[in-house]
Length: 168
Image (tube, rainbow, N blue to C red):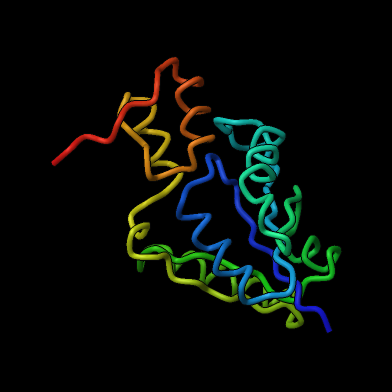
């Protein structure tokens, strides 16, 4: 039986930390669906369509990874795509508390779908989309934190040219 997992998120913007989780998740499952949350209560930096295009472009070489959008209850979406696993990334203890609550609520709603946590690679343990947005907005370099395509999108969004990472 084919093992389908779903990695949900806003991916606003996509970071190399997300790509780390996607790459490792793709090795664990027959199919990994990267599901972009369409959340009308938040004001995203990029539209859902922009995020979908970026993800599809960056993930094109990964044959068992597919990109889609969803709204509503995650477990309903996971069922709809034939999934049995939700993949979540953990960076720090602070992530664990929230993710643990979500996993328990999803288990309460259905015991058929399991949540699997993947620890962030140490190079990305501090990285979040929120921090990337703040650094880019203030003119700092996000090189090495996001794919080159995202770096260009951020520069265009904030009216700046991508800058080289500062040397220590």
